[in-house]
Image 1 (cartoon, protein in one colour):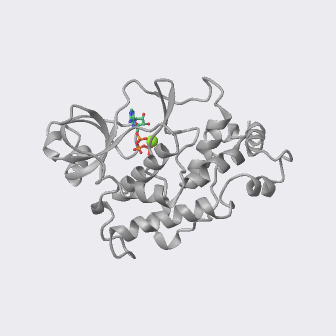
Image 2 (cartoon, helix red, strand yellow; image 1 turned 60 degrees about the horizontal axis):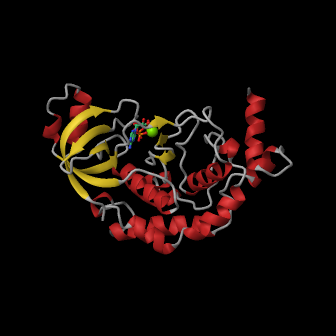
Length: 274
Ligand SMILES: Nc1ncnc2c1ncn2[C@@H]1O[C@H](COP(=O)(O)OP(=O)(O)OP(=O)(O)O)[C@@H](O)[C@H]1O
Ligand SMILES: [Mg+2]
């Protein structure tokens, strides 16, 4: 289970986030970015945040600690914005707290050339979890204490908004991915990471999702059946054929880049579009 804490003060909304996350203080004296259950796309976003961040952590990526935070909407009583009042009221009870990284900077590839090994591992991971939210416009990566930290996985695993459409072989469109031009070691990343996505690991990370965010999911008998749905999907993707991994198929379809590196393919595409 994730650690449980209680919100003591609503500090400020993070207006750059589309879902209007808030900075909140808690009874453990920590400061957190809270993703609210009552926000637009509801609790499935929180489920994706937990499964993906915990999977990332276990695969060696830096990502802030997660906790479940109990919210009394009264703590925002002095917040004048009606939209925020409504959001807090709709989110009474349990929400997701993400450790706030003070002074973190947004990631930018202009500062320094990203490491191809890191770029390839990250692109592989985002392809695995169907994460469409790592574009150069909005990379959802923070630079903090010399590391690149992964945040905001709420848009990943998007098949769960329509479970019958879930397809573990669905191709990942990485053309917009912030690190695609640098992901020249995709095969090595695949060889390293795929065997680490085991049933044991997936059981462990899905077990961290609270039952109440999985209850009454249409098509499933109980919360554990939903967890198993995620496990089977991600396991099939990690084990199965690689038609989902950008690279060969995309490059061949476009008929460019004969050298075989997808990083080169994207770099060329970007140059052409300049
Ligand atoms: N743990 C954190 N520590 C510090 N800053 C953070 C943290 N999490 C988020 N932020 C800041 O808040 C912004 C919004 O957070 P996040 O991207 O998670 O929200 P969102 O509503 O899902 O956003 P989006 O508009 O990308 O969908 C981030 O771009 C980042 O600047
Ligand atoms: Mg974001």
